[in-house]
Length: 314
Image 1 (cartoon, helix red, strand yellow):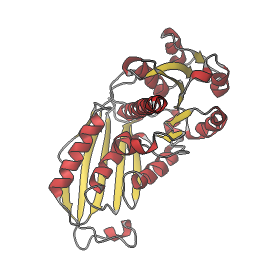
Image 2 (cartoon, one colour):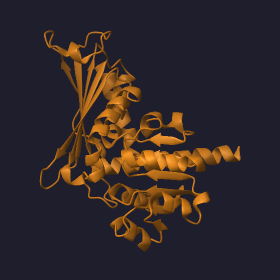
Image 3 (cartoon, one colour):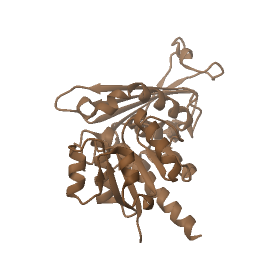
């Protein structure tokens, strides 16, 4: 079967890990180019050793490369600000863009939740690492009962947070909060990121808190377990740290300040504790935050490629 050609913009940790995942794991995609701006980057050097075409001249270099016209999917693993410029340059060429930054030009996509609704989108946003880890759980709860408020805390090893991540902290919280609502199904969402300086580095930990009314706890617990199993299909290191917890909200606790004005009374707090261990294809195993982004992006691109192939043969 002929593979769909894909290029990756960004020769840093995320872009390089994504390149290696495509080369090692994908039966659908062919790695057509790795694009950077630093000719001395480890990512570009590794790509050259792996016989992957490269350019250190950014998107302009990609557009000028032989075979650019045959590339159908372009991943952007740079930064939110850079993606705005990159997307603008690439729009005239009709490529499908998969954005691993918090730029959020296109629809938010979390593969286990809503990928099927956006297979024809020209620019898909992969939200954030915290969003990919926690939004499936928010959705799993919201499909069982209304969730007027959801809050997530993503704790990642400081060593796994490169310049792009650190430059995008504000975009991380804004994008993740918005996606908790639009994709997760919460009426109001809040996101917090913690850069953990512990040595040795700890793997990614995520906590999801949801306020709900009276609901079937067993149904919610089962829904969360089903969702975790679904995410594990493309992120094997994704797992629950302990059983889903349900805590009654005291009558005098002022949680109404967190809820939308028209929300029903919240009687229960649902707490879900997650851990994401990376596959260590290029990044260390503790960098589960980066691994879940590249794994989700790969899953998305493969589904898009399959969808396009089916449409072409119809």
